[in-house]
Amino acid sequence: MIGKFLINAETGALTVSDWLDRETQATYNLVVEAWDNYQFGYLSGESRNAFKQIVVHVEDVNDNPPILQMPEECTTITEFHNHREPIVSVSATDADDNSSPNGRVQFHLVGGKGHGT
Ligand SMILES: [Ca+2]
Ligand SMILES: [Ca+2]
Image: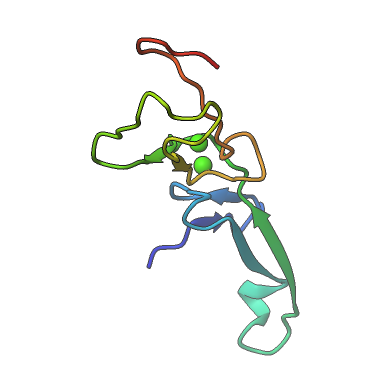
């Protein structure tokens, strides 16, 4: 697997090297290693190193639409159906972060004869 991040050996600049998708992986734990005197001292043991962990959190982008789940068939009610009594239940899921507006779903009637809120 090709890594998602690169670090410049000279400047230490950490960069992204591939597309990131929060829905696939939201957090990356990277470990950076720094060496001094690497070129001349590594083989002779005159080089020192240190490690540090970097945690990268990928912020969510609203890149997934809601997916509606509802009955396939036509729904039938009688003309005596009680007001406010549920006819059918519609649900939806959204792959984006549901702790943000990107993944929270609301329902509205937007058309059809006799629609209202
Ligand atoms: Ca997203
Ligand atoms: Ca969404």
